[in-house]
Length: 271
Ligand code: NI
Image (cartoon, protein in one colour):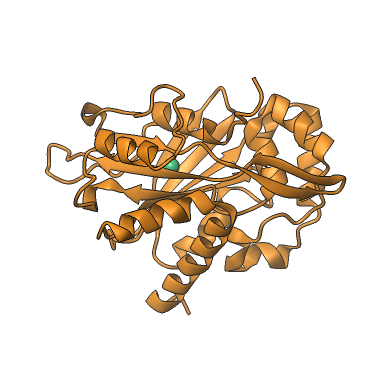
């Protein structure tokens, strides 16, 4: 049964998986709480491939059963990504942003590697809601990860981590003392956070109705078949929304800004 309690538990399990991968997010979350803030999520982002068994719908089904509805679509031509976002009528529920790599546009090498990974996932696993944070269903090789990263950083990330939240996003609008994104960024940097500066630390403008910033994903140790390697993990994002002419806060996304935010999982250890 899709109940509110079940949804809360589903979200808690997803958050638990995320902070295990992203200690910096937990640190920032705790800083907010210690400052007396209530932290609500603006959105949660998930990544997948548009393989017939695994497209956006295979992840979205676990949210639509709780009442989420499709609300917008986005194209990222250069990165060969397509995305949709889902919203719930309860505005306290985070939006869900799901992107997929368009396999028909990538090289035969990526197509072959991904197909091989997808073939190792059972239909049963995809149908369970915990699939959303089930991680990897295959054994990854570090040299294959590097090959993928050369062509698509996105493909390499999913190959290394599988299915799990790529980022959670703090809703800046409900923060009491960090309601200004510049002030928030200063606070984060003061506390030792490295921000994604691709396209500037703040993506978007009040005129575009959405301002976003994000941390750079910290490197974490990942087990590959041939050993443990440190690679970029997940990041934490921050979003401030502005009112549309009808007075309601804009709830969509800006493809140009999201395009730069995807780069928060780029490796920064190499030139
Ligand atoms: Ni995001």
